[in-house]
Length: 269
Ligand SMILES: [Zn+2]
Image (cartoon, rainbow, N blue to C red):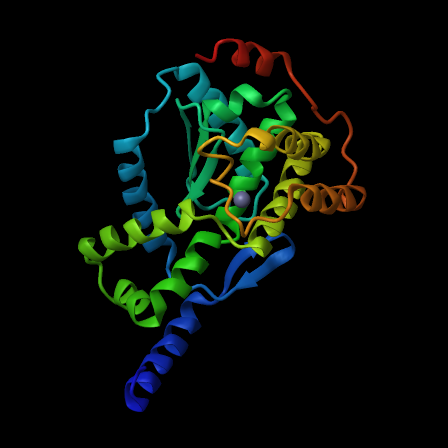
C-alpha cells in the first residue's frame, strides 16, 4: 500500500498526465479511453516485443505472402480509428493455429492458421480482429492495470531503454495469456465494422469462427491468440457477430473470396 502522501502525489501526477493523455480515441464512433502510456512509448514497447518475437519465431521466407498480408492489413488500417499509427504485418512459418497483435501495431499470422482458412474474407476477419486489439489499446490497458500507476509514470517520465525492455517482457506475457472476454467481443465488433468498410463481406467473420469451432475438437498447442479460459465461447461470438451484421452499412460488391487468396494458399509450405 502507498502512504497517504505518496498516493496523493501519484494521484495528482495521474491527473496531470491525464490532462494530456486521457483523450485517446480507441474505437469507432469516437470512443475514448483513459490511456497513460503515450503512443511513443507504446511503439517502443511493440518494437522491443517484435525483436524478441523474431528471436524465437521463424518469419516465412516468402516475399509474396508478406506483401499480400501487408496489403490487406493496410487497407483495414486505412478505414480504422488508428490511421496515424504505422502497422507491421508478418506471416510466421509454424504449424500453430495462431495469430496475435502486440501494442504498437505489430501483427503476426501463423501458416498453421492460414492453411485452415478457406476464403479471403475469413483471413481478413482475423487481420481486422487483430488490428482492433491495437485500436482499442487492449494490450496497453492490461499493462496499465498489471504494472500499476507508479511504473507507468516511470515509463512516462523517463525514456530509459531498460524500463522499456522489462515492460516489453511483461507485455509479451500479457499478449500470450490472452485478452479479457469483453476485449475479445470489442475486437470482434470493431473488426466487423472495419472489414465491412474496407469492402469485404462481414460473413467472413462468421465463417472464421465456424472454422475455429470445427477444429477446436483437436486443439493444437497454439490456437488463435493461444485461446485461454477467459476467451468467450466461440458459439457466443458467432451469435454476437450475427446480431451485429444487419446493423452495418450496406456496401455493394463486397469480396467474400478471391482467386488471389486461393493462389497464395496453394503456395504455402
Ligand atoms: Zn482477440
